[in-house]
Amino acid sequence: MPFVENSSYRPPLFLKNAHLQTSLPTLFRKVRGFEYRRERIDTPDGDFLDLDWSETGSKKVCILCHGLESNSGEPYMMGMVRAFNRRDWDAVAMNFRGCSGEPNRHLRSYHSGATDDLQTVVAHIEGLSRYEEIVVVGFSLGGNLALKYIGERGGNVSPILSGAAAVSVPCDLESCSGQMAQWENRFYMRRFIKKLNRKMEIKCRFPEAHFRFEEFLKMTTFKEFDDHYTGPVHGFKDAVDYWNRCSCRQFLHDIQVPTLLINAEDDPFLTERCHPTSEAEENPSFYFEKPAHGGHVGFMSRNSNGEYWHEKRVADFLSVKPD
Image (cartoon, rainbow, N blue to C red; front, side, top):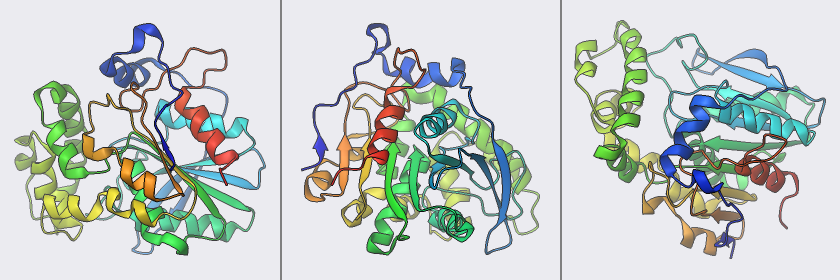
């Protein structure tokens, strides 16, 4: 029964507040100790993905997937890269379409269920013929993507893909969209919508765009955005259809490689639907850990090496996987 009921995470006394855990690392954390090497790869539909590598010369590599409107340069991404490098792993941070500093070529972008792009990266790494082991780690939206990918492929994952982990994951997209629309999350919602609208200003110039930029300036929720752009542009009927088909929770029972999910009980972005206890109890390959504190991709720690608790937990789990 791999539901980890008694999590080892204990926040510093003054950092039990979920909003502090969520905000402080983004605003103030600095991660040093490595440099990225960028590689651009083509996608089957004529677009591109930018990969940022941090290499140690290992035969093992970790693929990292970031969250909504994020990129490889976020502190939480760099912290996890450094944690794997310290354990003698190469790491490659995948920038989703349009998130690497340059707009992508097509009207489509990325979304919570776009596992075709993750498969493109896995296939590219396999083709390098220098790795014996691959693991995948995702955060928030990227965590949903990683878990959906591992689950929907079941026993058909790459033979060298040996495990996965995900942190602060909206396992049920519909309920999380409602949660983010709540008054107490208005600061985060405004920030996300503002970032998304910067992309939409460019997308609206595409000849095939069926929308005008002025329409996005009126939007205040993910439902409005996903109804108008994410759903129809990516082959879904509307926001609800997109959320229902792409939420990772429905795929967790099919996971067949050791996989760890960490979702804090006090995460302000998530709902109870994002705590898949029963799936963990029924699937010996899927581990769910629910710390009482940690916020959204927080889990701050006080130690001399600068690693946060979740970085050590994930890197150790995937370096020495349970039987």
